[in-house]
Image 1: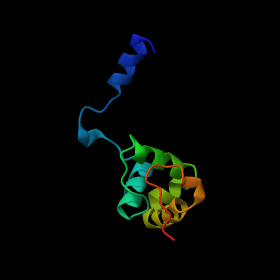
Image 2: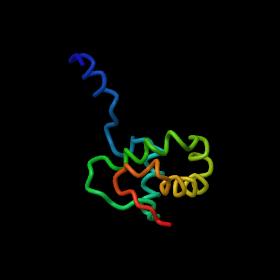
Image 3: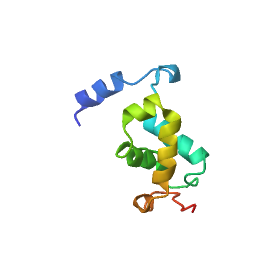
Amino acid sequence: MTSFQSQTWLDDMPTSVDDLTDAPYRSLAGALKRAGGYAKDNAPFSEFRWADFLRCRIPRELVERHFGRAGALAMNLAQNADAAALPGWRRLA
């Protein structure tokens, strides 16, 4: 990355927390953790990893329009063996 590209990227950053936009899959991952879908973990960026996992499996429209239904689906997906490599994974059943 050139210094020009770095400066352009920095110019696009919000100047206040109030200017941040919602990241729907991070919100979903956070709700999943609070609901017990996965355990708190010391692995860096674990919530981002869970958000990426969910992003590939749950349509954004469902997350934005029916967050509760998306959360129920996320809870089911969190129990799947496909999630076993994610930090904090635990099988509840």
